[in-house]
Length: 362
Image 1 (spheres, rainbow, N blue to C red):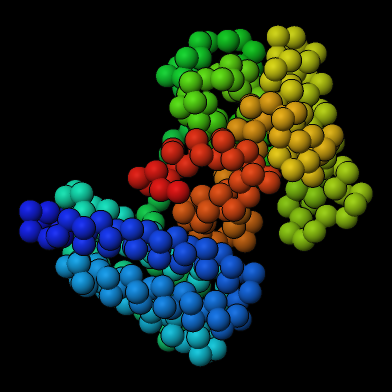
Image 2 (image 1 turned 90 degrees about the vertical axis):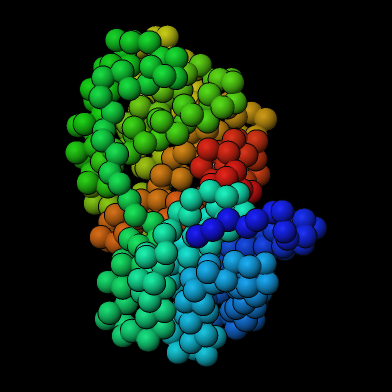
């Protein structure tokens, strides 16, 4: 895919296109999330179709018609949705979100003269798979959605951290941290849905802290990440894996997991800051969290970081218990941003976006 030659197109035209594209793209993201709560809302579906169609028309106008097939495939799916022939759900939403995100990346690479993230040979099978969602049977859809997600968002497994994997974050060897790390494999074995989770969360939390010039002591933050859900491993598996809503008694039992880790950290000495982070990581900015209903000014930065990275990882891997593909990263990023200022710290969500969002998009 060739980049735009900026020596020929009118610079104002290019600038206007990109501003309009960003506005339409972000509006489409918001509409997709609204549709999950109101999947039969015909006005939302019509608005989404118009936004996608507008983006496609603008791409043709600016000379990027070679990106349009992926948007045409999205339109192919939106049309029967508007007609009520297929039902909108979060699985279908993930495919559309990924297709829109792929479009954004293709536009960015074209405008910046960078290699395209999707080469020309891969575009036809992607578009064909998405378009086929409009006509496939209900029985065929799950496998086809897996195919679409694999084509749009291929995953590579990251090996578990070994040794002092966090030296790059200024963390020296520490006997207590090594002890906590030795506990993790046993904890991970408690549930098949936890495999590698703590190390993923730790790396993102430490990266956010470093980007903000380490306002939280990295060793204390790592200890808090290691231990923040330690108490969950002592809950009954039937409760850990319960698919429905907790009863009030079950909710009370789950919330007690905080005290186990907090008490352990305080007993060991030298980890009071980590204990505070663990004890507060379920508090929210608007004061509706637990255990103490703290508000934003009362919650420490480490707890604010852990709340975000914990929720992000849970969103990405939320389907593990039903044997479905991971949620796309773009979906999890949007979910975190949806609750910025209410559940999560807006300041720390901004830091998270810098690391997690492609090209630092807001």
